[in-house]
Amino acid sequence: MEWCIHDNISSTCYICNGRKKEVKPVKVENGDVEKFEDVRCDLCDAPCKRKRPQKTWICSVCSWRSNISKSNPAKYDFYLYDQSTGPQGGRSELQKMTNQFKNKYWIKIPRERREQILNEQDKLSYEYYSRMKLFFQFNPR
Image (cartoon, rainbow, N blue to C red; front, side, top):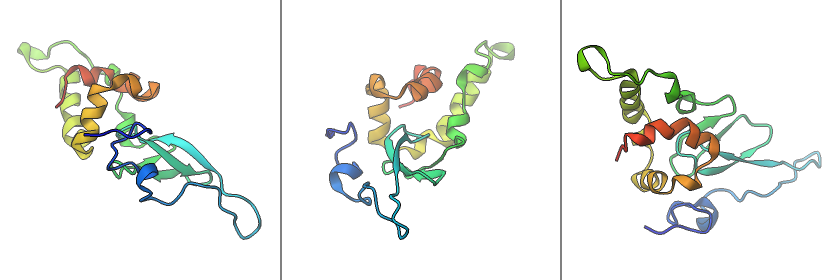
């Protein structure tokens, strides 16, 4: 697996491969210039571009549609769940929610990107890492 200079998987990097529209300011009919903002995917934390007036963007790595008001994966905060063992030695709430997140969202991330996330956690955004730190402890490979 190769990584490009943008810290993406080289075969899926939209900047290197040019598969997505060029992210350059475009002149609109009235003479204004469309502006783009650097954002991160809520699901896989890949760098993305978003047009300023729009509230959503699609990730080029996992095809997830993220939203300014935070899409569902970003609403998982694993620190809110009880870490103590359940009744009669059963699973804790944290284990249950981790399993639910893994089955609902984690599997939607391409395998190469999941490996990159788990192996290079120092390159993740602070917001993503702080939200997912407890999830990473379960090492969901």
